[in-house]
Image (cartoon, rainbow, N blue to C red; front, side, top):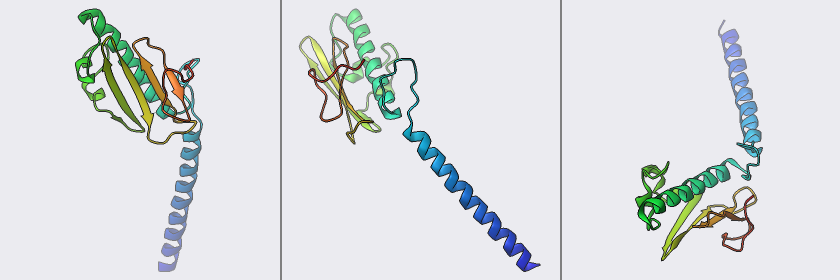
Length: 148
């Protein structure tokens, strides 16, 4: 009886291990293939989609802030509750990306730099003109290709 029980437990453990490895392989494959969020989505990965969403939300909040205050916000903290910009968006560590925000006399510069720069984690850059630039080789700037 003990041998039979031991054999059943061994088969159960083997099944769990096999199922876990199949699930891990499936999840790894699912993470490698990015599914666009909307027609024309320029993101190459989930991380890029989140970074681009953050950048668009910040640019939109700056436009709204300027409309109300006749100038752009000089810090991310000033954008809290403007449009959909929340307090949780103020910290510059955004997971796979780090935000750099610099106020200028009549505008601002906003860039997102990935912690690992590659084809699926491009750097992004925008100013008060709202045009988003991206680069997969270096920090994006105004001369980098425009995100379509």
